[in-house]
Image (cartoon, rainbow, N blue to C red; front, side):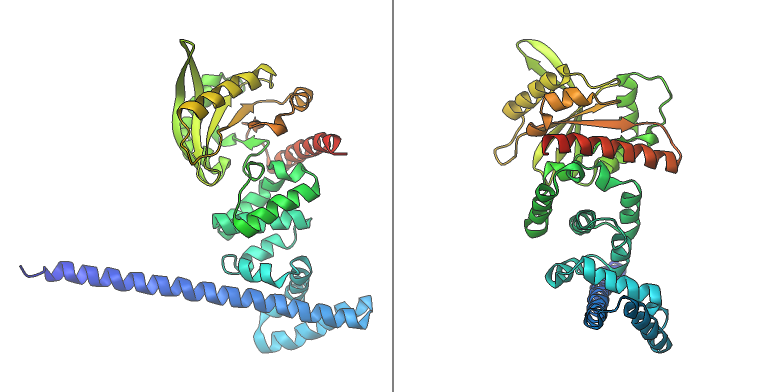
Length: 346
């Protein structure tokens, strides 16, 4: 039977469109990588020249002189701020091998967002998560604005331990729970009023499950609500059950309205042991639990040594706060968490 010429034409145009788009993407990635490496090498060359001269003022003079000449020949991409950024890029990412790897997935526009960050640890955090989660520049910008690094457990850990986890991520794509779980979670999209119950919080999350998954982070998949477990003939129900693809483990989430209470740990551990026995596949890691509370109880959390268990505690913010106030509140959370961890690792 002869092939329908209309269907044949449609298949032809579909195939050619895919070829064009694939090639465009490959060319774009090659160009982006080439530009990123060019800018790194320009920064390196300028830094070497400045270092040889050993005069602080010379750096500004040479950048201004270079900018005048290069802008005349190649355009605005070589302004004084642009050349200064290239120098900072080379200083902050001094390992060419790491830059070459990152440049395959991060564009120069990504690096423009990362370069001004305050610490090497923060820059490494965003660069590596950008790489493994394929963030757009817009997504990266939003993550930085929402203080993702400060809200992630790893930000408060001793620097050497944090560096080891980021090194494992860089070298083998190994994602640790401390790079996944946050404190606090920003749930202002739920639209909850001043007074609500746990069932209202759960219902609001399910209604906005896509938003909730975005706040949890990439890799989470929603499995079940009110997961039923029968233990010693008694019914128990877990609020929300998720799976994290990269961690390869079930994630149990229990929702609480008030402050964290020590008894919540035992309850969550019971859920986790049941899930490990009845729901975990042979190739999966042990389940991990997240208790979401409106407020923490810092001394109880510290005494229970939850950082040594598979039970995490995260606070949440449901208020729709002005950006400046939210930033101050997040910063306060960060300072409090960091002090707690410093007390454990003096």
